[in-house]
Image 1 (cartoon, protein in one colour):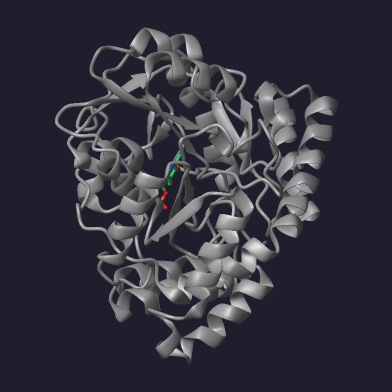
Image 2: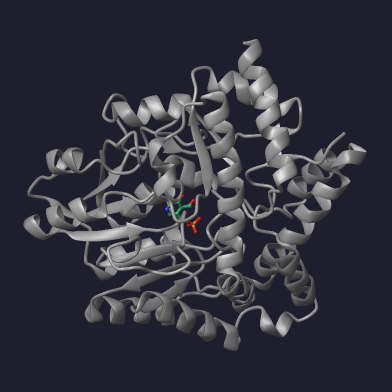
Length: 413
Ligand SMILES: Cc1ncc(COP(=O)(O)O)c(C=O)c1O
């Protein structure tokens, strides 16, 4: 049996992160508070040139931001179809209403024409998501927001460019949202940041951060154990005991869930939590290695692009414009069957972002205010998408195994 290829098996559990997580296990006094928390904030502020506030997750950061912008009371916030449930959940938790606008097929991100159509007198903000790292049309969205006096929030959960360049990702929003979850651009296992261009909102965010509740030590212990547990699972997989090991961890509640049951029903806990220092330590090390992490993503991306040219696979056009991709999106009829067949070869391509407009698939879309038929492009993409992993712990050999298995399947079906 071979090692599993996966989108979510500790995709950012690099050797450096595993080492840091191991050392942290024995230093509980560094878990909740410490100097690295401030160092991480300062590094983000230097990178973006904006004031940063840190929270336990990106979704909590977004909820704090909406509160700081005084968005609630039924105010409408435009978001894209083909997104993660945590985005509309934060809007609902703030008291707002998520309004879904369709996406462009070439970027998988908001279509400015659909945004214009979705604006009403109740609209207060637009959240623009750079899906999988493909840049959204931020200049068009900026123009619309200026014209209509709306706040533009750039959701950079999926991408962190090596450098922030004028006109590029992270430069158009009134605020920028980052996530340091397990499969994001950099990972602290958990964590989120909001960068604010406007002083007043930045001040309010810092006040919210100062009163945020700490996570429990038990939770932090589970979080820092995550890179170690997945590294072990990957390595024992060829012995045939990896699946059982993960199942046992889950049963003992040693694998913290990414989405709580209530979040799948459109309800988010309204309490904001502080980003633990331990997670800041892990995320800071990855921020300092961002160029190397993105280089690996670009190398695997280039490999898949070569295969795409060779085998004429239909790929989302905008992948060439990404500073670094989170995943490599192909569009194929029968994507669901292909995923099922690849799973038998220990190639797990179900990342949760398929067959649904509001992801993952286990989410109740009606509870999250999505009406079927509202975003036809997003619905087609959700059906056809087959994303290949390009994360920093993928190797070229694993990419070759994935491409080879995919090519064989496409030829024989
Ligand atoms: C597009 C998008 N925005 C925001 C978030 C929030 O991230 P977090 O998991 O840190 O709450 C996610 C998480 O999956 C996401 O996919």
